[in-house]
Length: 219
Image 1 (cartoon, rainbow, N blue to C red):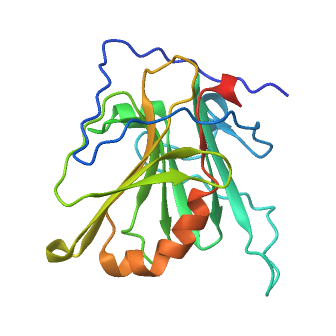
Image 2 (tube, rainbow, N blue to C red; image 1 turned 180 degrees about the vertical axis):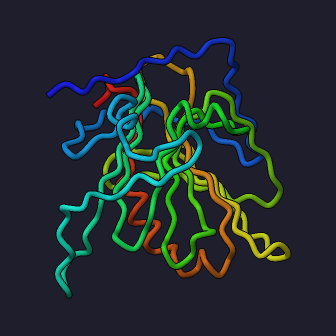
């Protein structure tokens, strides 16, 4: 069944990436199409109590709990608007909030749209998966790692432990699809406390493997 989505055209923006650690992004592989529930601009408008800039999207109530001793149950979270597409799967112990294009217009944020997600045990440790049309980054002592996920996504991971601030600075930038369209980039950003990161890092790495982003034509 085709999903009706609102189409947004962004103009007047200049993409730039200034990383002290450097590294040019390479093309990501084509990805299979999502098979799970999708939040689009149209069906999100019908969510009861949804307000611009806030409001958690409830998880599907029909989901069965995970069997003890088996694989943990996960919730697929998907948002798309025009050719922008975000997808991530979260365990039951994590929460999320979808921020639409309209929501983000009300905020002073570089991202155009995003999915915020965080562990229930550490609600202040918010990770943001989103789409940017302008982006700048710089730092000292940043570690840069080339990243290739099990689902085929590739990119770069930048991070720095700032002991004095008790914070981990983390930015993940995904490679652009090799389709000649370089109008923006997809990224994950977070700055959790070090104690929260040490407890949630293993789960985050599993969540990271579920990320799928890119234009609809690439799926």
